[in-house]
Image (cartoon, rainbow, N blue to C red; front, side):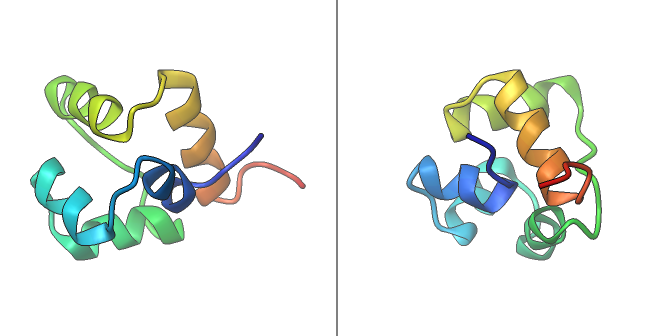
Length: 74
């Protein structure tokens, strides 16, 4: 099942404000990721943290990022 970053966050049971706080990023940054305006750029520590917070695998996150960026054809 393919989902975007917003759906991945929601699957983890997080509101946007909660996720941004836990990821230590601005809410606008999170919204830009989810809308596909910007691709997430993170340090390795931040990346490990997002996988833990979103309770997902690397593959799940990459697929959701591609979906959000419009890189996956439906």
